[in-house]
Image 1 (cartoon, rainbow, N blue to C red):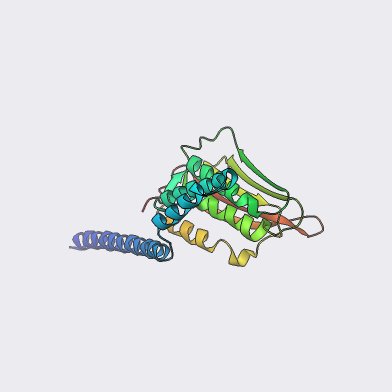
Image 2: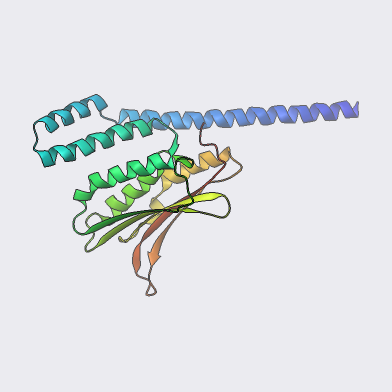
Length: 232
């Protein structure tokens, strides 16, 4: 009788554990759906945007038409990527390059953008949460370099770690960030992903300082394991 009772307890334990896991997954799905719905509510109709852009392109000079065409392609790529939970690092970096070119005229003064990818990384095989790198680049441009005096440098660096992880860093030479109020969305998303994976993503942000303690810029980076499930 005691043995039967023990077996029943073990079975009940696993049943309760399964129910808890299912509830947690359903809660995560609900949170993501709520975020998606909020994004939809705040988004202007894409058809309206493209109609306006196409009309402007037709009636613009060559230089302005080229600029509007880049913006149109960026919006189309953004709509495609925002509907996907994860993308290849190749797709993400291609989108980042398009984004930087559209933002370039808004960054006054001397601006240099550099993308460095380690030769041992296959960008098509590494997958990342959609828009992660773009968010870090946008923060660096909008809150760091735009309006910053003097030379402005922005670097995206992709490296291979020995522990089976790929590191993606965004580095700028701006005034630095208030670390307490930046990266909240990324940290929450990573926490949700890590809940259902044994191998964990990591995220860090730090202000770069000289020997005299003066802020020289900011570095934001995340590491993603080779074996990780980014789907819901």
